[in-house]
Image (tube, rainbow, N blue to C red):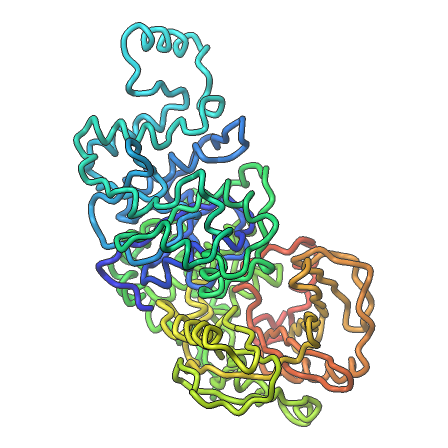
Length: 635
């Protein structure tokens, strides 16, 4: 769905750590209703759905101290402070990550609502930057030893005395809602802005005490009991909801229908761990020159995908990108002043002007730094993750993209291509609607999109009417992506692929997860073999060297010494992977070994967009050392 100009950009905050299926569902619900969504964060964030922009929260508010409530061990006070700073500096609509969108929320200066008869909740809120209530509320939130604004007389005098004497409790030792709804409500009443409030039914139709009903009763009953024609969103009371769904999602509940409709799998994104400390601060150089291009020019270069306000939040990374590009140009590195080879294209060519290149590199740097917690030196990269950033912009890539799932098999040079067994496909189309008549044998299949991530849906044939409607809902949502896949990671090659939808055979045995064999081909040679198992029952990931010796180290997930046996045709798998690797600087080739047959899953040119931190840092360095003798890195 293309984001509408009359809809506000949604701003959210996730301190750090992996998103669970609940947060994924909520973020994607806004995207499906046409909103742009920006997720601010202070540390590494995992499991972020495609189409969500990641921005460092330090660009909005860099706290001297993270305020975490000492009783519940949650950063709610810090989040309450951040959302006020967001409203002062952008025109975004703030939403908590436990708010699910049911319909688009129109732009307005004031957006907030009651969650009971007397109190405004701050889970969904927007105040204009010149709001008197916002100014007073912001001033109050920046006091680490706050005194509630409604306290007067002798009680205030005593608290002021305690504060002056250093006896007043710090905000972290005060109530969980020290900067929360009660204070917001008071400031709105005091400054005459509470008349803008929406009724309970608009944003908070689900009472806190009834949280579990979103999972306990059928979706139809839930809608009849809680939702009305004016309901735009539902606050799910996240901390309580996580406790409620800890044992699983009930079939046909409101949550189940929303998760399925948005393509979110609880097994792929379990509930996150608690108790992490504040992340390490990213150190920016102190001597970065000012941007030579205006923020308006950079915004125009993104075709309006990024607003001037969003560009402003990324200013430090844009400065770093400008600094890195200046070094690369002056050093004439990576063939910056040369043309791509015939039949090939580079990111440098795809982004047709300096503003577009600057924005693309800044997005890559931002995602990298917010995961790795440091800024790379792109003129002298050491790790494979750093070198992937260079590759995205300067690597020659064949114009026939290896990343197209429908044509990846034809990318394998002969005679190695003859070693593959083609995956059987039964329908493909540019239209996001399943045909009324399909000739399929009873069984299990996969519905997929050829140029997206996580866009797959299991079909059980024959389908019921409900299953068919759900499949078509998936196709519709995939076809109306507001932003092309790979945009935020600057993986430009996905935008060169015409979107198509298809049905293919399910290679896994009934009730089993298929084992992924992922061959990391660096400079034309397999350097590491990644084996992924039990994705739906506790992801295990083992790694081997080219000779299939087990490496007892962790890549992105926990490992296990209970390794998979060497496939019968392992040597052929290596040959296939290395044949592909001769055509590009780097490729991760995903293969399946089933009996005596080898199938190609997909070819990934830049795992995780070149951002994700490896659990064993020396692996990153070892793979980086192996990337030599190529056009980009000859020495």
